[in-house]
Length: 379
Image (cartoon, rainbow, N blue to C red; front, side, top):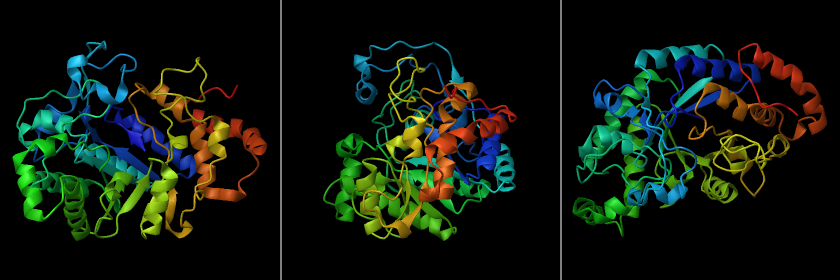
């Protein structure tokens, strides 16, 4: 999974990553195109999404003092900002070319348009996407913003408009709608949302997300596509249809719940979050926090934790880009850990001992270097 919403990555660098994936026989690029801090997909029907939503005035410097609460309480902002406008977006033609480029190399590009949370950039472009049409700016910091989508018919219509355009660009049988980290505060405060809950016979606003997911899933199914979401989509009960769950929170529990309910799962544990540092060495570049070493990654078993093996579609490494501002930094964080992910996916429990993997690694990294892709030094 490549997050191009927090820090935009030029399309030629995305293509370079696709070439690296081809070398490793990684076969799905999950492209995270929208978030609070930027909207990267060109819409012909909602043009302000890129005219406004693709650009933020500045970016927080370093780590927010309180990552998760910072955006919820901007009045307590003690952070500093770089004062540099940041942004960019991909045209539909650029993305069609990327899809074809990837397809020729055996890779499917799965788009993600995050909904109903992580909507600050969309709300900045179109205030009417909220119950209260407040004028907002695109998110400048990291964390979870409280601004989410209205999930009545107006909100559903917006999403089906956008997804209709997405389906015309991407040929992936899977379409990711996010579904993660959706605060309920706006829905709880909205008379419109409360009335909708009563009309639908829901016990509370928490059920609105499942209703919304069902609507979006039905739309995608009508176009021959399958909904994918982060594991929050099953918190209020299993959605209708045949969704795929990407298990990331307390991932063994989430994966177990999903597979036991008969749903297919992609394993995305914290060990495969490559926006986290290589280990806990203070000498590593700024990251969201310490993370897995190469040895930790290579030791990962996607089937641990009592999951149903027949429902595991695969595993996925995450490259969230809050702390990955450049292509060079991306390569440092991704490689060689992504090589280990490829070997787990292809060889599973039959993969060679770690010492043999290390012995063969320099030659594999040389092949990546020929593409212009660097890596964290092995020493």
